[in-house]
Amino acid sequence: MKSTHRYLSVNDAQRAWGLYATCAGHSQTRPGDEFPSSAHPDEYFFTWKKGRILHEWQFSLVEHGCGIVEFPGKRLSANENALIILPPECWHRYRPDKSTGWTTLWIGLGGQLAERLVGGLGVKMDGDVRDISRSSELPRVFAETVGDIIAHGVERPYFTAARVLSLVAALAEESSSAANGASTAGLVSRAQSHILEHATEQVDFAALAESLGVPYRTLRYMFAKETGTSLLQYQLETRLVRAKNLLRSTDMPIGEIASRLGFNSTWYFAHFFQKRVRSSPAAYRKRQKSRTDF
Image (cartoon, rainbow, N blue to C red; front, side):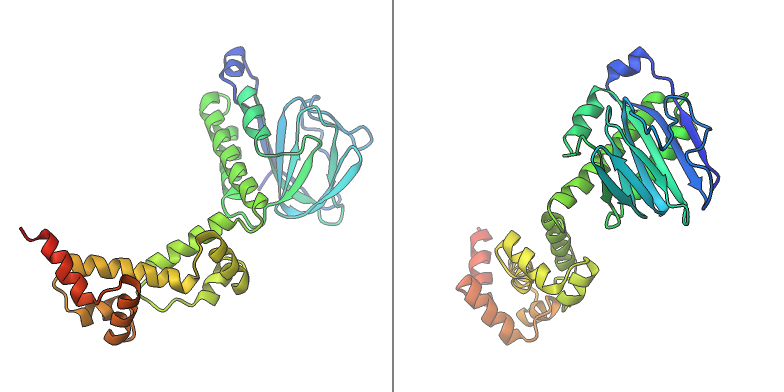
């Protein structure tokens, strides 16, 4: 894709609104190319020797290639799927590796709402580089937002500001996941959803853990810590709830309920039900039916 960008003028009404895009672009620097390109306004252009200070937030996503980023007192690597975070009033400089070049997407934003929302993400005010390779949402939202700003930023500034808001939301999700390591709540929630969807089947919990990107023992630990029960017990409890509903609301034979819910035998279903409910399935059905017969 050819390098392209858009710089936007911001009026007083947009500033009063509290959130606005200032610029966006897609840049491709091939190995050996001059960097940075001179095709940018003076306030955005910089040299490696002097670096620069921006008066807005800017985020740059490295799609391909790699490079380095320097802030006062620290030098950070920026590899593929790195998100470079440039806070306002923070001196910085960056460049791609000459042997690889890089392809980046970048967005500038400002306003009081931007300061509050981005500031609430736990972003380091002395600059940062984050690895977002585990995020499936953020790169897509980033690319869509850049495209909307380039295409509609001039004639639809409030629309593009709303798109920037969706980007900040994606950043918040990424920050939440990063703050929770493997994102315990989100990971457990996905595991629960999978178990609910396949409650009547024999779930391969090791394969489920692999699909979620964590070792099986990590998933077992996180699930038990978050829910207070094991993966298998959660599935059995899910089946129990469905069994109660079928016993209350249908005349389906108990053997058929056991088979439909994935129990190996009617005996095992009746034994499990008795242990958990302190009643046989037949007695539970009779008791529930009597409560609704008037």
